Every structure is written in structure tokens, then in C-alpha cells.
Amino acid sequence: MSQKISTAVINRLPRYYRYLGDLHDEGVTKISSKELAERMNLTASQIRQDLNCFGGFGQQGYGYRVDYLLEEIANILGINNRYKSILIGCGKLGHALVNRITFTKRGFDLIGIFDNDPKVVGTVVGGHTIRDITELEEFCLENKPEAAFLALPREVAPETAAKLEKLGIKGFWNFSSGYIVLENKDIPVENVHLGDSLMSLSCRMKTIK
Image (cartoon, rainbow, N blue to C red; front, side, top):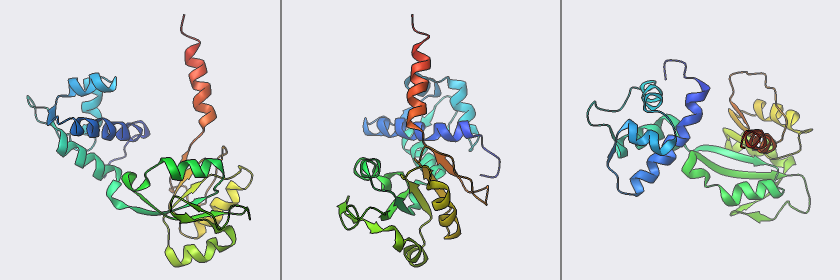
């Protein structure tokens, strides 16, 4: 992507991928921006503007080929890159992430899980044996993971992230409920705040009569 794409557009791309995947599974071969907009609760002009950021992909009077657009958005999202990834923290949240998310379908290969709880270390989750956090540096130097998923307490997240940055991590998925600050400001950090989402729902419900 040569031009700077807004965060709002990037955040909508997984929705496009999900909806197009459903269409593909339903046997739909082509769809107009209007029809896709109705399914996604967007406007047709919004969809065209978003896709035009990457080249458009449609034909006037025909619409979009579902299989082609699905493949192109997968390429834009980097789903086929299969970034080597590690999970730090395997309490209840960490277990849920491993057991409920198919990482490989979303562009990531989980290659290691780490925790500091002796009761957890050595147990198996999702086919992975949980390693002691003291093995983290050696593991990273040997296996060179590119992404880290943080499901650990907020008070230790900044220090852990800084260490991981120095070990070559190029992207963070942060569930620690706090923000992390990195030396390299270009490294992407996705901060996931489940409580914030719930409060947003509360705010939106206030408007319902």
C-alpha cells in the first residue's frame, strides 16, 4: 500500500472478509456494492470508497466477483503471511484465546505459550505445552517470532512488551487492559479493551426509548 490508509478503513477490512466469506460459502458468485452495503449496514458509496483505496476491484454495471474480492482482501490483510506468534499469559483469558480463535485462518501461527505460574507451566492447551517465562528470551532468539499476544496483568505488560520489542517482535495484540509504549512508534499495537466495549454498549442503550 503506497498511500496512507486510514485506521477506520483498515478496521472495516475484516468485516468485508467475513461477509464475503459467508457469501462465498452460500455460493454467491457476484454482488453489487448496494447489495453488500445492505448486508453490512453500510452505504454503497462507503464500500466503493473503501475498496478504491486498494484499486477498486469492481466493474461498473457488474459489481464484484466474490471469490476475487475475497482473495484480494485476504492479501491486503496479510492472512497468507502466517506470522509466527507467541502468547504471553495463559490464565483464563489466554486459554480462551487459544481454544476459541483459529489463528492460522487470520494470518498467524501460534508457536509458543508462556506463563510464570508453576501450576500452569508444563500443562497443555490447544496442543501447545506452556513454557516457563524464563525461557522466553532463548525461545525468541531461536525461533524468531514476529507477533506477541499479551494476556497478562497490566502492571507487567509494559516491561514485557519492551523486552519483546528488543527480541524482534513486530506487532502486539494487547489484552492487558493498559497501554504499552514502544521505542519504535511504527510497531503496530492492537489494544483490546473488553470493558470499554461493554461501556460503549451501555452508552448506546441510553438512547433507546
